[in-house]
Image 1: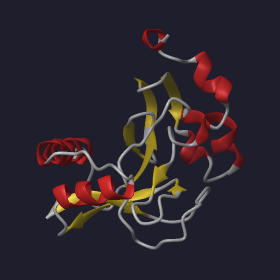
Image 2: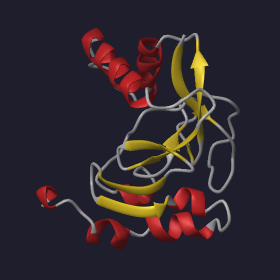
Image 3: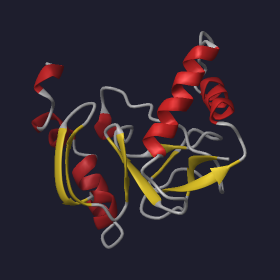
Length: 162
């Protein structure tokens, strides 16, 4: 059995109508404000949602990696690269317990109730007392107002990205 993330629910923001489907790993581009830097994509329909649940799965991570490459239309991938992806996903999910609800932000997964977050992601440096994803549970507009704002990302962009 392996741990992986699956769509948890449709709360706050969800473009995906699928139920209980595995997620995809990050597909973050250079426009994280579009949602690719703070939402999670479904492996079945490729649409995004906010919350994922860590679950045990009998599907080997390498198989989930193969499925993801197909869903993304990637054809030139080796078994070694898929194995590296599987190892990376296992490492990324290792800190979480089965049943944890997680969110994605700029290269990292966090439990939705994480506090005092400060890190440098793929694109920017972030500092939050509480994740915008969690704040959005009380006020859904907060998530897009913060993380969907291009200026938020540009003002915090990593200096080595210039």
